[in-house]
Amino acid sequence: MTAFSILDLAPVPEGCRPGDALRNTIDLARHADGLRYTRYWLAEHHNMVGIASAATAVVIGQVAAATQRIRVGAGGIMLPNHAPMVIAEQFGTLEELFPGRIDLGLGRAPGTDQRTLRALRIDPMEADRFPDDVLELQAFLADPAPGQPIRAVPGFGTHVPLWILGSSHFGSQLAAMLGLPYAFASHFAPDALDSALQIYRSQFRPSAQMQHAYAAAGVNVIAAETDEEAQHLFTSAQQRAAGIFRGVRGYLPPPIDDIETYWSPMEKVQASRMLACSIVGSPDTVRKGLEAFIARTGADELIVAAAIFDHEARKRSYSILDEVAAEFRDRPAMAAAG
Image (cartoon, rainbow, N blue to C red; front, side, top):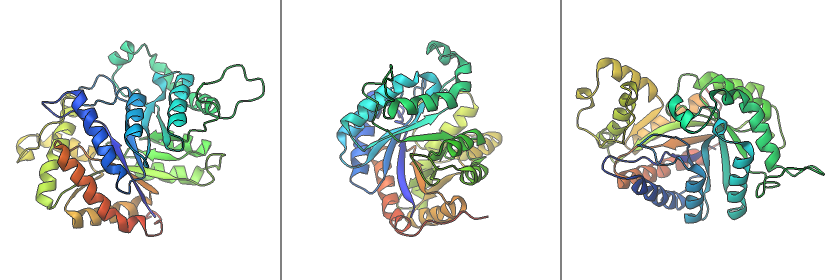
């Protein structure tokens, strides 16, 4: 079977404030909690006016408090920005408050630009310590050794499950070596998806946390009653992707009638490549797209993003996906093609 989960970047639509985006996040999480999604993740980004989840652990706590069933976590925390002990304390606190519902996905990228890194007081070379920092964090969350002088409180003994996130072979190799679940960010960086999953599965070593490889893949899904309506909603994500190549990271724009009048031919190529792992359309179109993506990747879980300007349309998209996903949840896992 294939599990389905949500990645919410807490998008700030044009004309709104971060508080509006965060209230939308809580409302969407409540909505997802009543459906069959496995987990609800938020991601750490800094100095981006269109993303409201910079204080990721704080938002996770609010989402967990507003829901009852769904797992809640980070997809992810950019570990080089933090001392491992601080993250252990934050997520240990969350686990103590919401036992059995907290995930901790870890990324090596800074989640921002170099100037913002300086504002965060982060040495860019910290990323080189990522494997050691993962191990240190894991130790802070484990049962303490006899006489251990430094403990994360809360944190020690909570065994918050760790994930490695990535968009390159580095993350897949590290996740395999440490025996951790792996999530590939194919929703915005799809180029190495197939090879990274192959490396992860072939090199996986069992660990105390996991005996078998478990791979998730990011995918954008924009679902509506018709293909035309879904394609219209998708133009918000297309505009935002084109803006990245223009050097502009702004608010989530409203959809437009004709995306071809918005971008240049080069921007179309670049943005379309970035959004290659996107399934956009009616329930039948989404079903066919999921069938192909799952057959291609053999993913144990899909982490679904949906950058939709209108909040009610975003909720409806996830409702449609939940209905379509039922047949994939209930069938045996598929081996990746090739």
